Amino acid sequence: MEKGLSITIMGMTVVFAVLIVIYISIALLTLTERLFPPPAVPDGPQPRSPGNTSGGSQTGIPTDEEVAAMKAAFSHHLNMKPDQFDLEIK
Image 1 (tube, rainbow, N blue to C red):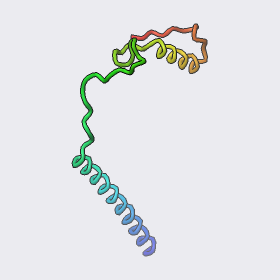
Image 2: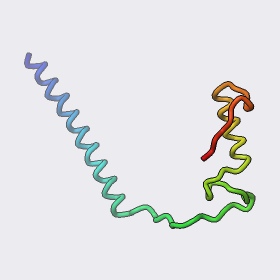
Image 3: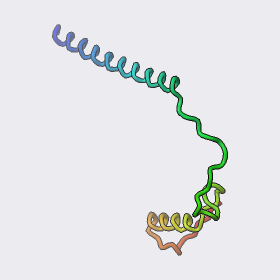
Image 4: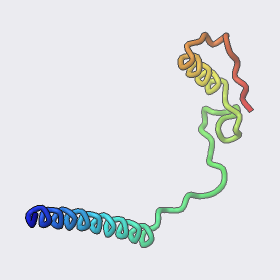
């Protein structure tokens, strides 16, 4: 009985020690993020790539190539031919 109690106390001590180490690690990571914040991302529109002249992710309107890629992905996923369904992009 005494051996079982000592094993239980030793196991609980190890568990609490590991939990304390995890807590301190998380606290230190939070502290380093406060001391060294990530660089700010500039606001405003990003410059467009030279090859993309119609629509694109900057305007919210997908290009013809993007629509074709989406249709091919859906066609493959649904096991349907591309002419069996239509995409409505809003």
